[in-house]
Amino acid sequence: MSEEPALDPERPIIDPHLHLWEIRRAPDAPQEPQRFLLDELLATVAASGHTITHTVFVESHQMYRADGPAEIAPIGETEFANGIAAMGASGQYGPCRVAHRIVGSADLRLGVGVTAVLRAHVARAGERFRGIRMATAWSAAGLFGLPPDPSGAGILADPAFVEGARVLAAMDLSLDVWCLHSQLGELTALAGAVPELTIVLDHIGSPEAGGRWGGDEPPVRAEWERGIAELARCANVRVKLGGMGMNFSGPLASVPGPGTSEQLAGRWRPYVETCLAAFGAERAMFESNFPPDQAAATYGATWNAFKRIARDYAPADKDRLFRGTAAEVYRIAL
Image (cartoon, rainbow, N blue to C red; front, side):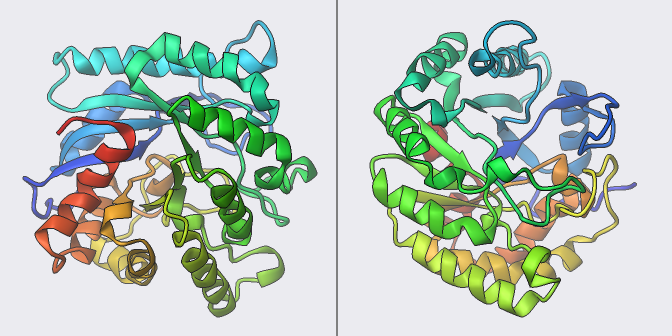
């Protein structure tokens, strides 16, 4: 589908949440087969017309090692992302520094045992490796058309997970967390237990419409707003404003949805403004969450929607939202 003309096309943007993957057809997979590697990413950015200066790779269970202990399998993903980052850093593929920083994965439930895994990640990617994210989003209704895994409930409150989070903080690495709004209380407790750890809430803490809420948006939104307000009292937490285009009810889309930036801005503005009222621009950043958010619209329309929402914000706040906060969290020199 054709792209919208980019609004404010010269504004420099750090996209702090992009995935790279090649998903092959497999039984019961939560994604449709699709390829989104360097060529596809660069074509997507070019077609959008936006000035994306850097991207942050966020774990997506790609290229895990087939051999060896399960706890070191995610190191393969960091090696994969680091190779693409080296290609981007060469300048041969244009000015966008793809996967300039890497958020990999490790099982924090290993407790102090996660130290060796984290050291191996850093050894492969050096300063590019900035933190981890592991699967923590859980719903009693299931996600992406899959049934719920009972073992996924309560991960953020697991004492072993908290111990692993302390190791992460001691190594000066950050923790990205995607959880649903019903888990925000657990994340608030974690942030309070490990105040020295920088925690990034992904996808605004995804208000959930399924399960016991039965698609009834007002009570979901009220509960989400309370959770966001409580979490924002933890000074060590940042929030990513995005992930609002995902469809939790079925496999991840392989082609962009039809939404316009005007439509997206209208739907997303109340959620963005709630987060900004709680966190302030100095602790918030826009994210594309591509390819998952293409369920709603194209990459260009997604960034246009954010620019429409931020149109009347102070220049300093705009700069924080589009690149400053991301640069600070992931140690990117501007």
